[in-house]
Amino acid sequence: MTLADSQTTVLTRTTAVAPTRGLVEITAVHKSFGSLHVLRGVSLTVEPGSVTAILGPSGSGKSTLLRTINHLEKVDAGYVAIDGSLVGYRKRGNSLHELREKDILKQRTGIGMVFQNFNLFGHLTALENVVEAPVVAQGKTKAEARRRGLELLERVGLGDKAGAYPRQLSGGQQQRVAIARALALDPKILLFDEPTSALDPELVNEVLDVIRELATSGTTLVIVTHEMGFARDVADTVVFMDQGQIVESGTPAEIFANPREERTRGFLSKIIEPAFNI
Amino acid sequence: MTIAPTDVEQAATRTAPQAAGTASPGEGAQTNNAVPPALPPAPGRAAADYSGYRIVAARHPWRWAGTAVVALGLAAVLWSLATNPRWEWDVVAQWFTAESVIRGLGETLKLTVIAGALGFVLGFILALMRLSASPLLVSVSWTFSWIFRSTPLLVQMLLWYNLGYLYEKISLGIPFTSVTFFEVQTTTLVSQFAAAILGLTLNQAAYSAEIIRGGILSVDQGQLEAAAALGIPAWRRSTRIVLPQAMRSILPTAFNEIIGLVKGTSIVYVLAYSELFYTVQVIYNRTQQVLPLLLVATLWYIVITSVLSVFQYYIERHYAKGAVRTLPLTPLQKARKFFTIRTNARNLT
Ligand SMILES: Nc1ncnc2c1ncn2[C@@H]1O[C@H](COP(=O)(O)OP(=O)(O)OP(=O)(O)O)[C@@H](O)[C@H]1O
Ligand SMILES: [Mg+2]
Image 1 (cartoon, rainbow over the protein chains, first blue to last red):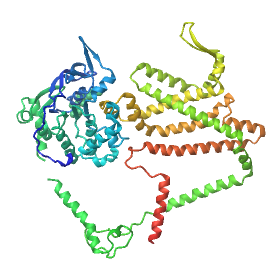
Image 2: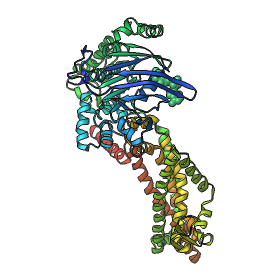
Image 3: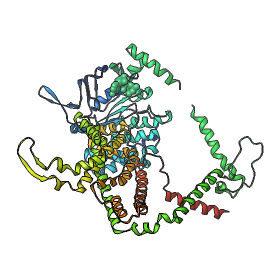
């Protein structure tokens, strides 16, 4: 059975062994673009194997926060650590040394990222997209990477689309290839930046079903999303951001049922009400 | 639920052709193939069923008229070319494959291939420099393009050839000391050929750098970001992810440049370098058959350009992979399809 088939099954988290890798510690991170102070002292701990959903209004810095985790964005102050080692820096005595490009790339292979607009390589087939990074970044053999690539495409329900180019695929299929591509590096952490917001409503579920299945696999997931129902079902922790700060975080039950903060309440009332009337 | 009604509708339309099939038994699969319906559709029915109708392609009478006019004009031109004795086709034929002309042609090709290849490789490096984060590399690349695009190629060529006049010796050593590793006379280093290649390559590099830079800029930034997020190294990001996608916008202009270069090599006549054009000039100065010999050179340039155009077509097609949903047919495939359809049509009637 492929993932895309397993429509809205209610999942209980059944991770067999407690995952030991994939701990993300974000500590007092600040980031500015010119005079715009986008992250204002964000601290967040994401437990290994957990699923964290980040919610918040547009421009609140969700994407920026996500991008600091794999060092696509350099922080101005504070730090991000993964399993205890700093992202983008090496600690030596009392100083932090910026890592060289090569070491940063190595760190990134442990962190998969799925983009809002897929960013599949348009001139490569679905399978070639998936195979590229394991071969060049992890030094796997072509044959091995292909075998694993096919397996992953099968897993996201696209075993028959291995030879298709991205432009020959629907949006939902492209996003599932993008997820397979991120999985190919066996990351301990997967970052999703609004993975379904570029999709037509009927394609959203096929992608969410794939992510839902990943939630039980022991990989740490950090998901920026506007799909409230999905966040409520799948997340262990929901984080609400506004104006570059984390306003509050807690279990879905806490955040959705009785948010403590006025700003959270205001945001949720705007988003959730219409969503439930469908 | 909003899905249900659409489903029902689809189911309804899907069964329609089957209903038509049962209405005219024995035709089943052929209904598309220009067979008139056994039973005409009942008049006055709201949802008409056109499955049995023959499809008549749109006719374009003006297209045919236009084609006829152009063909007539072309025929007139060819007729005058063939019958006017002043074109001296016999002389053209005599010189077209003459040994000296072929040797000149070889030199032209050699210059084009070497200067074209080196020019584009250097241009690629310059383009990467220009797009790099290092201000030094950016300004070096910018200055290079600035200088070589603002001086006439003719002047560059003569300067390279006369380098020996400006600098008698070229030596490799440590600057501002007397340590030298080796030293040569400039004139022995810069031959006619070297001056030609230097001039053409550097000039070509300056132009192709901009073409390649334009192509790279046309690739979506998200591609680089995704590649970086996957841990793919910078060089590989450029060559494997960005460049192949940039090729689509680079190629048409690049072929313009190469075709320009084929004829542009004729500028090396200032060095008395005997490529194709210089060769025919030498010949007609001797024989006074100016027009036919210019025709010889022209015909060869046409041949080269035609071959390059075919290359261009297939190379562009190669890089269009994945950029278009379905590749258009090649002329060969189109021709084959045209004839199969014709034959099928004839077999049917
Ligand atoms: N590279 C950049 N340069 C300048 N400003 C930027 C840059 N990236 C983001 N910003 C600004 O930072 C702020 C936060 O952006 P961010 O993309 O993190 O928001 P977001 O919470 O993801 O919003 P959305 O839900 O709309 O995606 C915005 O005001 C944005 O304009
Ligand atoms: Mg965003």
